[in-house]
Length: 156
Length: 156
DNA sequence: CTTGAGCTGTGTGTAACACACAGAGTTATA
DNA sequence: TATAACTCTGTGTGTTACACACAGCTCAAG
Ligand SMILES: [Zn+2]
Ligand SMILES: [Zn+2]
Ligand SMILES: [Zn+2]
Ligand SMILES: [Zn+2]
Image: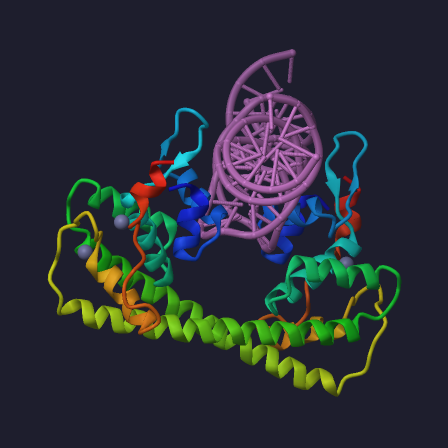
């Protein structure tokens, strides 16, 4: 099987197969006469596994680690159980950030609909964005830091 | 102001400032004697804007487009209003994918806790992952594609 | 044999920085 | 003033998971 045949059979691009080959997840043999890579049943099984794992959010690095066990004939089940727990935590982290960002964006869209268009000045590029962020910081620091002593520093 | 001074004043790393400089968002002058970059008030204002915009999820490319307007003295407000609407859509898209992935992961963790550890075979690397994905596809295709005709293809 | 379409491997680009590192500047000590 | 130690700078490269470009090769039709 050549790269495009494998790709078509699994519904991915040939470049994707080439990529996984390049990083060593697939190990096709090289045809001696034309140098083309020849994929076999084992590569097909590995490729299917890769797609399933990626579908669950596993990274290529995770898959490499998994293969490093299974290639020795060892079960990867325990490893996989641990990896997916970490994955769930990461996903919930990102989920929370998504929620925060989403509400920030919604609020900004509403607020901005009432605000005028301003032209940039030497201290403000777009008041919509710059003011939105200051609400975010709340009372942590009332005044934005500025290059106050810049003359004294520039004197060198 | 040198790169580290600006970075410290805004609470970012010097590498971040260098990065924004490298891609042209900041335009410090170069000191003629030692070649060090010298940042001024304008760079500070731009840097603050960048941080505010990034905090709202704007990409560096978005910020470049915004600057291309404001550097001409034009208001970026309308542009910014449009950009943030797109951003919200993208965020909700990603949010939905997060939700799907999260439930997939939770379900997998539960299901896998009842399943035994298996050793890899020639057709299955880790049944946990491979079987999980098949539930996902449901009845789209019952049997997984395999290199059935591989002999006929390999005959070349 | 020639032409042309199709396929292949390899090199490079992507986003937003982080890290490594050699060389230059700065400070301290003698 | 010399010299060692320490800090700072710019630049080159690495990161993720591919996608794209492209020259050269293969293979079937004529
Ligand atoms: Zn397993
Ligand atoms: Zn200032
Ligand atoms: Zn504006
Ligand atoms: Zn097979």
